[in-house]
Length: 220
Image 1: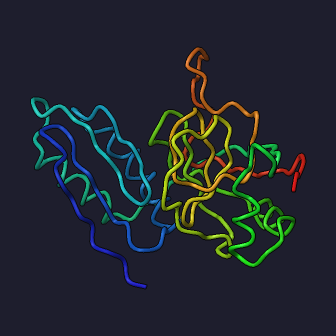
Image 2 (image 1 turned 90 degrees about the vertical axis):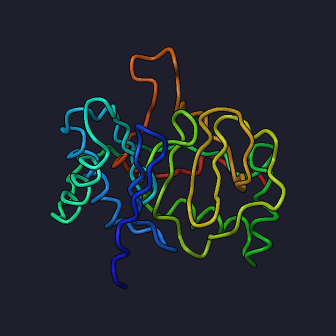
């Protein structure tokens, strides 16, 4: 599959979005996005370099650096093709599957033609990569989901998913760091804290970390 040419778009006067996302998420492209973020942080006038899913948001001071300079640096660094070597941590997340904390699990399994035990087995088998952190404080976008568990998001979003909800949305896995609305399917619940505003480091996970889900219990 050929690489998609970078797309750049201004997001206001002081931000530019660099986007190479295609129809399928690429771990190889994401590693280059991490490297690109590190390179852009060295450019005077850049205040933030925020990786998304195969994209990168650069926030800068337009009085300190011209947008054209930011865009040129982005394209030059991307063409260099560097890949970040990130020594991420392995984090185990204990999950109570099903029951009141995983209310979507029975229907999710039925729609896939699987029993709930097999869904849990396939969900806990991979080692996931934290591709990006965003959408809300501490929310992790995880790549590595078994493709047989891919399912479109709910047609009607849930107005409140509890903190710690372990979920699947499309081809991604995630964990709710706070209580908030979501259209993702909730399979279980964890008591691992992903976001603590009072902590010295408020967010548990960083891009490049790896996550393993461990089944602590299963309620049918």
